[in-house]
Image (tube, rainbow, N blue to C red; front, side):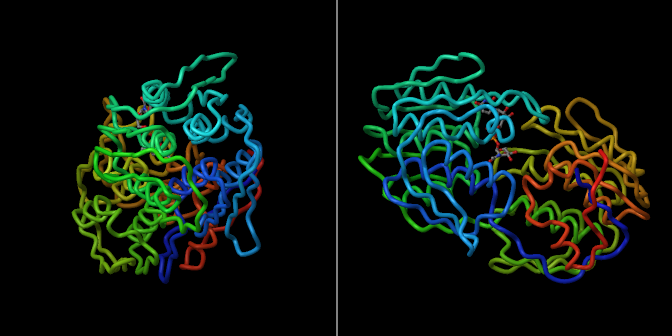
Length: 419
Ligand code: UD1
């Protein structure tokens, strides 16, 4: 296994380039199950989850590979209906093949993703909505088995806005008979990116980005060339890394509009930034102020930025609080940050953070993707050496993070680890 070793206390300085969005790329790549000619994807980050997606697409009968230029081409093939447990257990987003397989094949057998480090994360909303479109499901031997004659349009109201559920239904409804309306749909930018890609393939989707989406089913979808949007969470992570080290950093290819809630919270903390169309320059900060925050579905403050901003709060002046309303059990970074000298208490879904003067480097353990990012951020600001263990979590979502941070002046290396 590998770890990151960080000698903290150096302000970041220079340029940080944002990669393509993982969470947009995953559903967009699964959309290639729906099309009858090749898809060509660019700006797809080099990440473990993308490798898993390529593997899964090949198991399902598509011919997916990354070319020497970094672009990914997926050619259609003879489809198979089964997404095996070995892959699904490593990447929960595999459940997004359910809608496309039912639409194309009329059957799907997908391992049940099960629990994961950040809570139970059921898929009941995906199944309930697909049932309204004519699918029937059984649960057998840990697999979801779905069948349908042909999917038909339906008027569906989600009980809660679910990102994956909305994506699965967008894909299924694109090839269904008639019109589907998704109400209480999630509004995340990655959903808008998926809808844009599907429309480029011939789908008829409107209303994406609002909570009511209309999809007029079409007979067939064709391949297209598609550039994946930049990663708003990677960009937000870089903003916080620049702020905590009191650095001066230009963040390029930054999805500014999609980051509005994060930018607003950082401004409220006292961070000064210059903001362009697709870039943000963070100016050297003094000590930031404590603030209160609560995670919400988009356009609210993203749960995927909660752990990172908490690292920043640990060094802010006064008290902060952060409430997690999307996932239970998403505070596993708290004891690790406290081991570095932070003062954070948990109380009924809320973290109460009292700002301290300094963090101290320590060996810490990453528990999930964004928790790992918060430990790296804390390590960049801490005095002394921080060793972040189990960084395979980080590698699921951040492309060459230590190389990017090193180029901006951080003292960070990847080393092998016994743990
Ligand atoms: C996606 C993102 C993840 C992000 C999350 C919320 C990807 C690959 N992952 O995850 O990074 O943190 O959105 O912005 O894009 N729920 C149910 N039943 C369902 C579906 C969801 O109860 O059928 C619950 C979940 O347990 C969770 C909440 O709804 O508490 C939101 O989940 P959802 O929006 O579906 O998140 P994901 O698509 O899994």
